[in-house]
Length: 114
Image (tube, rainbow, N blue to C red; front, side, top):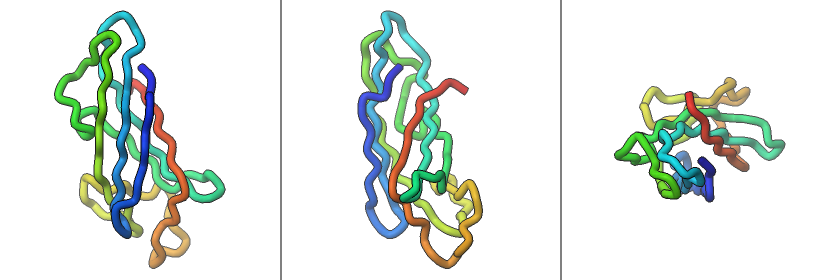
């Protein structure tokens, strides 16, 4: 399983969209992986870390056929202080200035099997 491509774009003040393309480069069917999304600041320090399930990305099947691709999209809100909504990514560490929005400068996506 490889992540062929991904993008993370801002839609509004605290709304973002993650798009990801996953490909099974193997010769056998494999289980769909979970993804770890890490949002970073300008020093590449983690601000938010969240695990995303295949279902959250729109996968209808639990497996990916040999040589197949999956394209998933997730809209999420990043708020400070953290909200309780299931689509909200909560900061992994408290923001020292809770009245100011998180300054997201980058992201990382990692595929893994929990």
